[in-house]
Image (tube, rainbow, N blue to C red; front, side, top):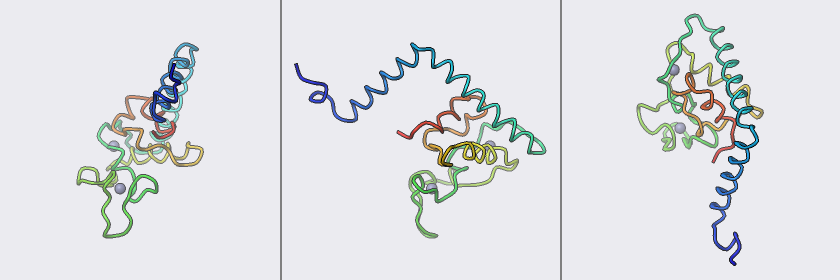
Length: 145
Ligand SMILES: [Zn+2]
Ligand SMILES: [Zn+2]
């Protein structure tokens, strides 16, 4: 019989391992632990930020791209004043800009502050879903794909 290494590419084997890991996590009840953890982190971040702004409101508009500074090493490929970013900030709608009440920018900073190395996986997470979905913030702490 052919071995796993003969049949699958490196990437496919990695994906298989991830799928296997997901099953193990689900079986062990670790997913419940992770879910609680995600909710706690989410609540802590929102409590901190809402306590620091005058008129806190839950925003569902800001995309990750407009909160991310240009350039951001490793994500944004703008390399000089006249160079254009073609990864995240490639249209008017995704240009970096502060949101009027600043809530999302502060959530963004708080996610970064809580990250061990201050480099969350911004590509993993969709900022417009942060308010409603704790997992969306948790994903910023998972390794990038
Ligand atoms: Zn916003
Ligand atoms: Zn960019």
